[in-house]
Length: 388
Image (cartoon, rainbow, N blue to C red; front, side, top):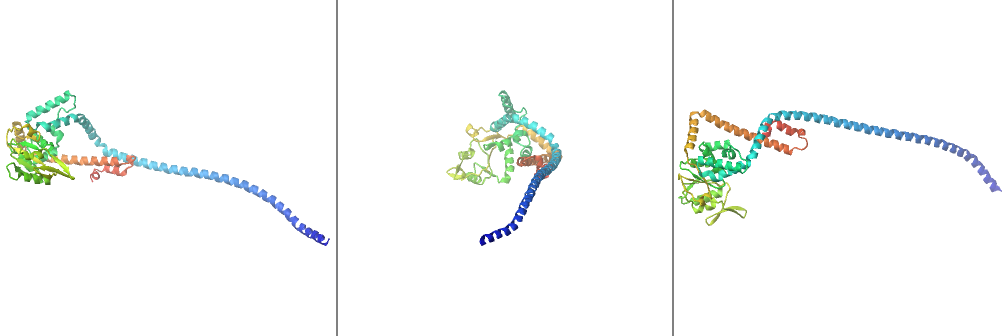
């Protein structure tokens, strides 16, 4: 009984202490739940507001980025307009010349097949003939081209197709007569694939070759020289030009490998067999032959090995030469002016070609819009920088 009483007394004291606390706890819990519900509501509202703020921030950033893009586009467009204006102004003067060049090139391209064909025929066949017969040959070839519907220029000129004024002036300075036949002969000498044999009773071709190749160390030999083959071998090895004078109607059989250019490659070396020995062949080697016979008769086996070129002075050729000499002596000022104009024109053509090549290179290497390439526009505006 004592133990029960004591237990009941303990329970009573504990109950009187704990019960008020339980009630306070329940009341606090109810209040906490209400506060938590309010907090949840406020947090949801805050999340919605933050989401709205994020959307507004994204819209703002997008607007700023779009504004920057538009600003850059405006600046880029303004720069392009400025460069386009510069480019139009710089190249406006070239439009007329380019239009004329395009028209001339189209005409030349249309006739290039026939012109090249007739020029090749001239180089191959008409070197041995006189001026009158050469004109007749060209006229007949042009007529046959037209009959076969091969496009060819009516005013075909071998000089216009295979030479330029500056080169012709250099030939004249080296002693080549100024008449058209001599200029055609010089073209045959320099453009033919076979070594030239020049019919030269007046020594005009001889003097011209001597002056033309003097700076290259020209060696002059004759078939009667005891060591002419040795001289030939040395010149072939080191690539020096050789002039063989006073050729007759027959050629030494020892020259046949040289005339036929019977070269071969052995061990990575370009060789040619002369006699019993193989010697190195330098591609800079040149071989010229002249004869003083006025009307030589060469057999077909000789004609197919060389390019026979008739440098004999005719009446019309002599008239042209005398006219040129008279002009040079009577009006040296006009002759000097002519030479200066040829030099200036050639210099301008070289400068123009360099500029065009530079422009084409810059255009080829340019990427994207050409108006965005400030360097290219600057070069196009400054021809001097193009040359550099």
